[in-house]
Amino acid sequence: MKKLFWSAFAMSLILQSSYLLAQSEAVDDFLGLESEIMPALAGEQGFTPSEMHEAASWQVNEKNVVQDLPEPNKGQNFSIIPWSSLEPTDWLSINTWLLERDIKDKTPDWKIRLREASHKELAAKFLNCRGTCSVYRGSNKAQTQYLSRVLEGDEIKTEKDSVAWIYFMDGSLMRLSPESSLSVHEFNIGKSEIFILVRLNQGHFYWHPRNKAEYPQEFSPETDTFSLPLMIREANQPFYERKIFNTQTDFERLSEVMDLDERAVKDQIAYLNKLKNENNPHLTHRSKIMIVSPNASVVSSEASFDYFYLPGGKSYFKKRTLELGEEFSLHLRGYTSTEVHTISETQWYEVEANGKSFSQMLEVPGHLQITELLTKRIKTMELAREIWVKEFSVPILMTAVTPEILARDHGYRIWNEDLLKRFNFLVEYTRRIETTNLRSLENLLTKLESSGETVKKELSEDNYRASLNHYLLGLKSRYDGKRMRVREMNDLQYYVWILKNGKW
Image (cartoon, rainbow, N blue to C red; front, top):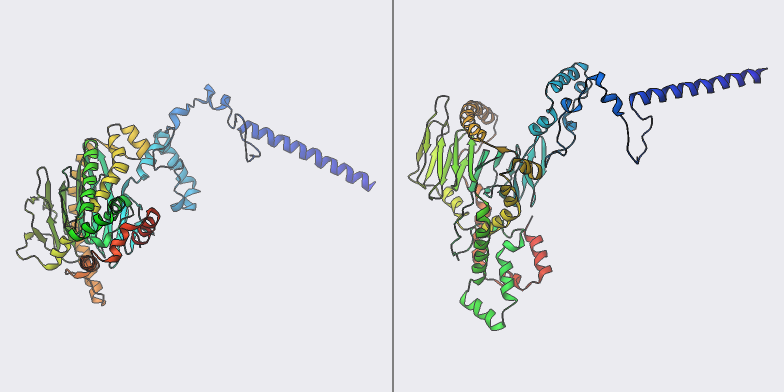
């Protein structure tokens, strides 16, 4: 009897389970869900039957609810969920969901807008770093190397005796000296102009935009040898020395050394000018940079210049070139200080620590003169720039006339007349916000000094010591046996030499 009872009970459980399973499958079918998703699905899948979301009684048109691109622009992801900064409490909050749902329903293209708002455009790449250079992206820090990317919002920092050469995507070069910090805020491409906004937090940097003129025949030694050789093999002078050495007889090699012939330099400059002529027709955009520091802002278009800023101290700057079409202006601090000061002389200027006034320096300190010397002759950097212009910048700027292609293939958005409005806003905004920051900085430095911490407010040799020593030692050993043996290397040996000496 007990066996019969348990058999009946088991049978009822089986029947009930079958009924519940069938009911569950019916619910899943009704909702358009799958009770189990296999690793691989073949054929057309119908997770949501068309008779449901296309039913006229539902009055739902999918195109009016969510608008999105068939494929996100370059640099953007399909997913727009900020996993790294997501708060579980907010994510699971019904109130947050209702608020977001209301906004999304009223903004059909919210996915496109959200991607564009969070997208950081590529501003620059690291051409070279000697020593220790870092990029801060939010709270994340990473050591840089050759080809490291710099996005909008990144901060670049160099440590003691470290130098960074950075290539901006418009073709401009920037050299960041030791113990310097610079933030790249914006890189905007317009129809005829490119606008770059950076902030020098401390230290020194040299800005060197590209020009279309041929590079002159210059046979004096390069000045920033501390940053050589570069990982771009065909940019280095030994690359051309090797090509010549492999085609010479022993007598020709001896004659070259005895006569101090600079044929390799001639070939290097010839290739540089050849690339310039090839790249010039494709680069029609005019570049403008706005460099902001707590006590002053400089706006430069097509001009090379040096800029120093010492926290709590003065700023120093010098316009290095004097060519037609250049623009160079200075903006001081103060809530009502709206005057624009045009700088036309190629002289050193100093800005007072409070940002209220500036003046031309009658006696230039040796620290500034030596810093200027280190970027006086940089033909290898110029050649590396042209190689990267052809590889990276020309494909971008050639498509800048077609906003859709520029965004899809390169990840940049075209600024039309809004670019001028953006610049005018930033001039006013940075003047006001930095005036406030300057007062806060003074209070902070006072507290640091009262606690025993030292803050550098004067120029020192720290900005050039390592580079100058390397340059002077290089002049002494310019023609020694170790240096001359590089030209005798085969391709593999030269490649290993570049790897060993091209990065630290």
